[in-house]
Image (tube, rainbow, N blue to C red; front, side, top):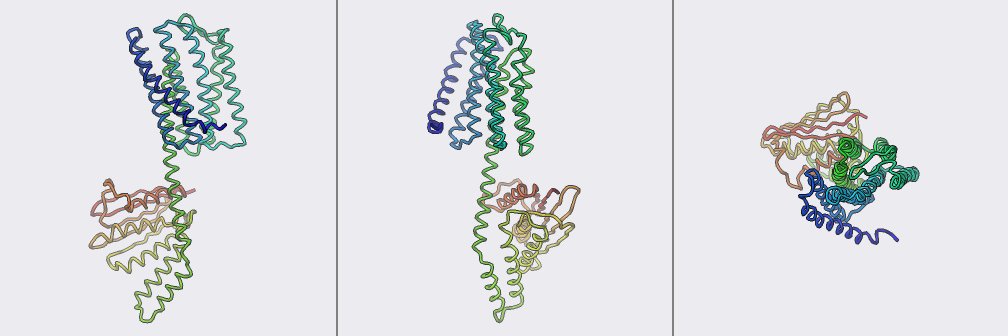
Length: 454
């Protein structure tokens, strides 16, 4: 039977257990607080707080109702972390209240089984988000399974033999083969690092995933002389908070990309319904009407040219040559000059042409400068379009002497900045470029596009 048939009751049961353990357990601990050491009370309080955080995050992911393979593994990790924190609490209770070496010994053995299980689930999470090749997946899972089994076998063997560790009263005694217990987790961590280095799509994923491994290892090494595993358990919780943020950053980026694709599909659909031949013939007929003044004929001619150039490129998903984009802008500027005459001046200072950019990039910036800058100023103004080349990039600058605006002021949701935000996203996704804009009220606005050389 499929697990998803029982997904809701299983998740609700887990949340109920987590909530009950956290809410009922802490009052019992506080009742005997006088019998505990200060360090023990501090650690137990932090561990219970960690259990509460695990419960809240687990419930929030479940209630989100958009469970993917990545979030499934993350929820499993949260459940495992809750169990790990609970083991730590039981260990403190056994040592400081009940003075039970047997319980403490059982806790220490169980704790050695948790890290390999967590690493196994963490690597499964990595495999999903890093798009690991399916043909290599079976071999990877076999290796991880054998490493986890090796750790389990050593822990079971240690119970009667104490070859790795044992209990000297209420203190841990180190056995002659103690180092063997660290080999499987270290090898699994090495596999995780290898996956991160070789399959991370960008530096953000590399930093996040490597931090997730480095933090518990560093805390574990620093706290090892103190024999306080609780510090490692708490550091792992910090890792899961980092992963929680990463999941929702990735989701936000996917949603933004999806919305951009939907918008492009809508634009492409609208463009596909335009019949260029019909438009051209209609405009041609209007131009040939008897009695049309020369200005009208010129305007229609420029508009026809503008449509011919833009209808073919507006729906393109690949970058276009800058010269093609510049031709579009020149047609657009001529049409605007017919409207605003001497109120609008446009200067071209084209220092470099041989590069590619997303269609409509320059035109959208120039249109924004004219519409929201120059034409809003009673005396009009000038738009200057400049291109330049640096050692590692191409730079487009559009300056206007219009009314300007406060870049920090809140803007309406349906304002022109939405188009510029989409422009920035397309620049980043298509050519790895950046877009920035600065402005001063009464002075004008400067927009700058930087496109890195491939």
